[in-house]
Every structure is written in structure tokens, then in C-alpha cells.
Length: 456
Image: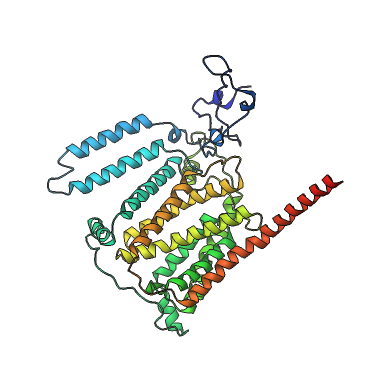
């Protein structure tokens, strides 16, 4: 019986046929025979020894080969086109006029060249729609942002503010922090005045978080935790000071719930959870309308995996969920501090780009983290998206910590200290009761059985 690759030689060893549901593993070369071709003979006790890194395989999903042209390797063609474009832009005065800022154009060209390399040579991630190359570019953007943060980590705050004026000359001017807790009387007028464009952005943000986390209760926990974080940090940032009804009615019960419901509960995630796309080839699709529908479907998920984080199943899942919650909170809080320290408006394009970039990076990152925790036999190492995004969030936190020295002199209020102390105690107490005590009991029973068996 002929294999899939014999029928379609254009498919790679890791790309199954269009009717196949399994991922074909790469062909492994036979191991050399000990003693032949200069290979030393191993001892018997060394024969079965394997190291963990020898079993590492890239994160691979089924490749979508229904539109064959877009999945053929074009590395040399892309290299030739890129070099031609670079030569034309760099040497043609009609494009690069005299007197323009050559440094800015040079930076743009360097970024474009790096992203082109990322698109062609980076390893594939867990997503294949609209194309694996798109998610390679997302990884490249994340890496560029991380390198920029590492550079800023070694600069002082004043130098960083001056550097931001190179990007936007309108920056570098101190901005007042707006407080939302001036009049907290629960009236229709105050509630109406609080409804602005940021409420829509709030709901859209939680729609995106629901698409990332894919867990209704996790989103609720994160929503409440963020409001508590705003309470804890309003002595540093004035815009965290909100009325109680703004925190719990407008934010949690209205904006956050609408976004979470639309993203997770109201059939969006549920629809794709059970919908697996198995498409025929593009050329085999009859009619213009079905072909157009097939092209549009390229921008929808190929499949959708529901996340069940299972915090009470074992200690590993509990630690993973707590760490993921902490990283998400840091990713939510970091842009507020960055805009305050660098004197940027909340709707500045840099802030919007950062939020959109973290959203795109978090989609494959959380997918990789979920598989790394729940399927260790397949994902024997942490994926590249989650590794890089974790490094980015931590580097942002380090930059903010360094620049915040002397910027927020007001001490931490005593109620906030007590709140964090009680919360930390509960985080330690829960796994101790849920996992530690049962494990200790099982350990004691095993040793008692061994002692009795030896005594008998």
C-alpha cells in the first residue's frame, strides 16, 4: 500500500494527507551498529540510557495543505525578492529622498529584514490558520519587543523618555493622572458619564482574554483579581482610583461579563470546540462562491481546543494556574505603569500596539502552555511562544521596577498589606490542605505497610 507521501510528493514528512487525522512523525534514521564505522562499543549499562533532550520534537500540528500553493517552500524566492527590494530602496534617490531621516528608514528596513527571516526560518507553532508564517511573524515581533525591553532595561528613565521622542516628537511632556473617584454617588448621571469608549475597549479586551484562556471561571477569577489589584495600587496611579460601582458594576458585572460571555460562553468558543475543518483542495472546489467561502474560511480557526485547567486535580495544575494568573495580572498592569512613566496617553498608538501584540502572542503561548502541562509525552519542552512571552512580561516588570524608584513615594497602605498577607496565606494553605496533607498520609501509610511486612 502506497504511503501518503508517495501519492503526494509535495507533502512534508510531518504534513498528513487531506483525509488523514494523524500527524505523521518524521522518518528516523537507523542507529549505527556498535563497533562499525568507528562507533565505539557501549557498555551494557549504557545501552539503554537516554537523555531528555534527545527526545525533544518540535511542536507540530497538522498542516493545512488544501491550498497547495501557499504551503510550498519559497525560501530562495523570498530571499531574492527581499534583496532586490532592499537594493532598490537603498540606492534609488526617488524613493529615499535627500534630506530625509536615513536612520529611521534604516531601522524600518532592519526590522523588515528580521521579520522576513522570522517568517521563513522560525519553527512552526501550534496554529496553522490563516498560515503558519503569520504566527512566525508574530513570534518575530515578540522577539523584537523583548530585545527593545532588554535595551531599555539598561537605560535610566529620563533617557528613555528622550528616546520616546525619536518615535513620536509629541511625547516627552508630563501628563496628569485622571482620577475616576471624585464623585461616587450612585446616580444615573454619574453612571452615564462613566460610559465612554474605554468601556467598549474593556469589553473587547475581555473578549480577547476569553479567547485566550477558554475557561469561564478562570476569566471570572482574573476579573476579580484585577479589580483587587486596582484597589491595591491606586495610591501609586490615580486612574486606578474608581468608585465602588465603577469597579464592581460597570467593570466586572457589565464590561467584563459581556466580553467573557461573548468570547467563551455564547457559542463562540463552543462553536469552534466541536468544529474541525476538513476541506477539499481549493482547485477541487466547484464554483466561484464556494471558492470564495473557502478563502474566507482560511482566517477562521482550523480547530478549537477547550481548556480545562483543573486547579484541584494536582499540585502541578494548581501552580500552573496561579502562575498564569500572576503573569496575566502583570501583563494587564504593565501598560498602565509604562504609559505613566513614559508620559503617554492611554490611546497612544504605542500602547494600543502593545496590547494588540500581547493578545496575538498570548493566543499560541497559552495553547502551548496547556499542552505542555496536560500532554508532557508530546510536548517535552516548553513551546517557543510561551517561553518568549514569559520573558517579555518579566522584562517589562523589571523595567518598571527600575524606573519606579523614587516615582511613587507614597507607602503601601496598611489595609493593602493585610489584604496581601491574607491572600498569600490562603494561597499557601489551600495546596497544603488539598495536596500536601493527603500526600503525607499516603506516604505514612506506605511506610507503615512496609514496616508491618518486615516485622511479620
